[in-house]
Length: 106
Image 1 (tube, rainbow, N blue to C red):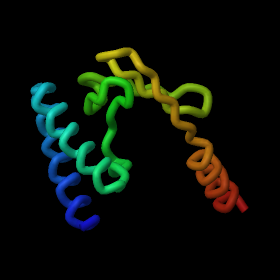
Image 2 (cartoon, helix red, strand yellow):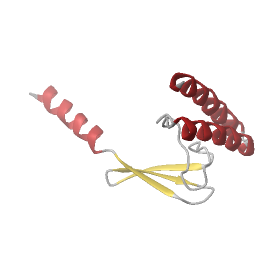
Image 3 (cartoon, rainbow, N blue to C red):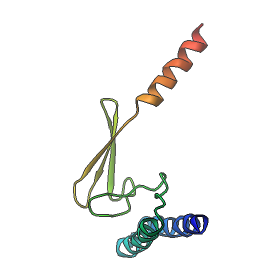
Image 4 (cartoon, rainbow, N blue to C red):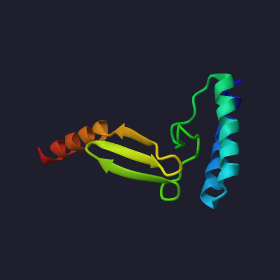
C-alpha cells in the first residue's frame, strides 16, 4: 500500500511541478493538494526533492514564485505568494567541502 502511495505521490508531484513551470498555479496547487491528501492518509512523508510553502501550500519554483538566497550558513527560500521564509542550514555540506579540501592539501 505504501509503495502505491509513494508512486502516486511522485506522479502527482511531478505533474504539479510541470504545471507550476508552465505558470498554471491553480492546477499545480490542486495536484499538490491531492498528493498531500495521499500523504496524510497513508502516513507517508512527501519526497524531500519537492519544494512547497508550508504556509500557503503552493508548489515553489525558484525564479518564478520563490526566491532562494544563501545567507550566513543558511539557504533562505522565500515564497513570493505569502512572503513566508524557510531557512535550511548547510553546515554539513560546508564541513564535507572543508574536509575534502584538507585531504587534498595533505
